[in-house]
Image 1 (cartoon, rainbow, N blue to C red):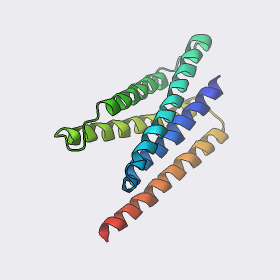
Image 2 (spheres, rainbow, N blue to C red):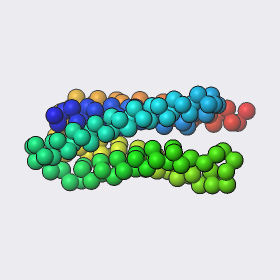
Image 3 (cartoon, helix red, strand yellow):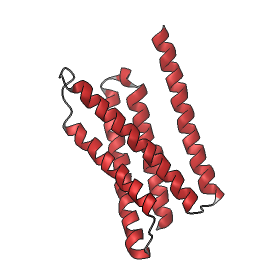
Length: 162
């Protein structure tokens, strides 16, 4: 059960949700397709996050797995993700006066959720004394994500300079 919690969490928070963030940041020129992909992928990632929380609750109750920092950060990230979903339903029109504020809220809460999710994955891999395969596996996944984001950021910068 512990392994499943970790695998589902890493897939959701370490793979699927970052892909959705990358789509929103770097593929807006494919309007409105980027939005539908972003929303759908984030919903799938949220579903993985929900399953991760359920597995975590089962670990806590059945195995008395008491890891307060990991659990607290996980709950915080999950609350942020719920707020992100609620924001979708409260999203003002593009020409609304408060759209800029909504964009700031949505972007920064999303960044905060991803930052804490990443920290939580690393924290738990370390605290669990997981084998090298977990550290290497997540390290490769995280590294690929960072390299892809850097390449896309450079390409976007070069495109703006033209």
